[in-house]
Figure 1 (cartoon, one colour):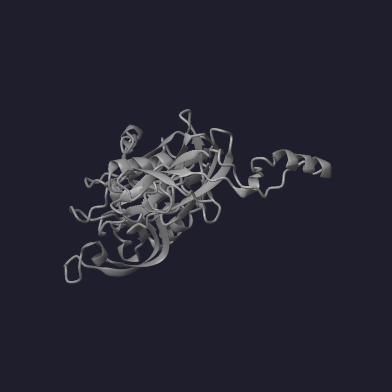
Figure 2: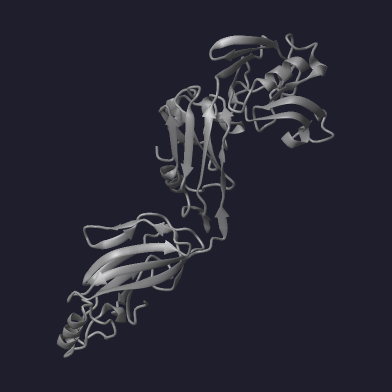
Length: 416
């Protein structure tokens, strides 16, 4: 029941305040009016009920507890990351429950100072109810409630988890991909504190940011084949920018398949494919022709996605129609390696150059039958190393976690 009187104190820049709720006694507590207690007790004993009828009102001398509560009753626009607190100014605080309209509770505990404090973040745009038990200085027990509503963000921050199930290669990191930036380092640190990766068997690894949208966890070295990975992201209630808050949690799991690591030598025009460390195929290839905008990037890349057929349009990577280097062509058996347009794919038009010269716009060209084999035997997360090119692969151009050694990767953490 709501308190008939309140004490308040200002708080935190929000349109809410600490309020002392005077807890009125419920009529169902069976307190007998003065002068009637003996008769009522004798009557109960005579009837064998062992109870006093719960129809009386509190005596004028009863003293309920007084509680200080934050946020105030009926407060609105409460920030999801501000702790909820309850303290008994007089009397003793009992059990406290904080829950939303669906009954989902928010954790909390009473500390040595007698203040109950919530331990979990709140959800934006949500009505919460506090239910508080207490006893007054004279032992008068009662329960009261208070409600408040969290703010509605101007922008709800959303994100996805990659991979979302399935079997992946040994180079595939866990990716928490935000649709918009997590603006400050402190905000990125709060995200990083709450995300969790569990691996079976256990492997050493670390979180790092490629930029303010891409948080990734990679093992120290490539995954052990057969590893089971579980990811949880309890991120609701975190702020990621001005008037921008996360509203949802997520989770995913995936399995690491066999080790497939391919090495492309851009000078020798070959690709050697190794499965579980054993060379199983060698292919003739043609990579990007000489030039700062066409040479294939050097470094360790990860297969991002597989597409049987794509129409490649150079306008999507900054070479518009009308430019001498413009192209638009249909390709098959495509394995994407970068967001900037590098693929391994079938290229029947360059078969004569494969194994002898580099003639592409940056992709790794293969004969049709070779490209089909490579496509059918590859999976997202497989490693493809490129050597011999003067053009460096930048981490944000693809899944760039392996550009760093492990010490360098750990330095990408917002907690470092």
